[in-house]
Length: 95
Length: 283
Image (cartoon, rainbow over all chains, first blue to last red; front, side, top):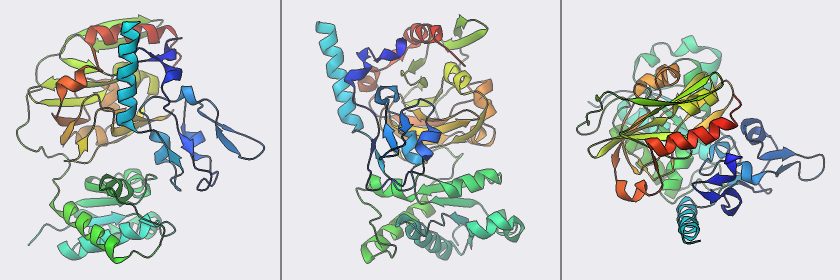
């Protein structure tokens, strides 16, 4: 599937996905209702919400964080991610 | 006498950022002798504010939930300036803190943000000389089943988030591709970026919402927002109809095009990318 790479880099090598701060999350599930890529998954046990499919997350998209009232979602730094992608692309060219 | 405004703020009194939005709203209203709109009362009895809303409208959102913006959108109000306090504080390296009662330092930040709002350019105005985007656009197409995706052959750069930048001099207009608008379906809402803000490459430069999903518009290029397209905020369907020309979202003054270019696709390369995507396209 073409979703396996982003900008020529294997998607699983790019650590871009939300992290839930469980000390802030109130499990309103707005992020899960919002995300069309099924990054989140609701669970019966504790915690009731997890980042189940991190590589489904669209690199550089942070739209779900805007739905989060308690500001419990964070993403990696964008400049660091760009640097990483550049480096991995160069390594890919060398290999 | 300064221009008068109506101000519709967030009412998030249960979060630290809400009272800051309220303070900023009060400061703006006081400074311009404007009108304050209570979002709760407006939601219940919109007619109460009919007269106040004849003034140009400033919307102040506290957090990313953007309740005030959404309320304005639901009632078809035209916003000339807006502020999202949590985001603005983050850009300044500050935060709203935990307390529901703003301290002196945060009130000073509120004062600064209120002054900025009053001196900001209106949406729909253009900062500096606009570049010429009148050149006709030629398209190539990718066909998959009954779907046809158009891609401009030249003058545009793309990222793999299906957003484009159209170049003219030291300016670029940005928007979403034909593929993305078809994937989202009929658009119901387009959020424009704030005028004058600096946008980094791959930062969100607004968002689009359809009956199916909401998506950030990820800017292919870095630069300062010099103009926004009020037409797509009023009529988001314009992006469905004409994503590459009339459906532009924002115009940026380019900051580092050569640096940005290394991570972008030109028309023919994006066409190949769409061809691969289209193979597993499910609308």
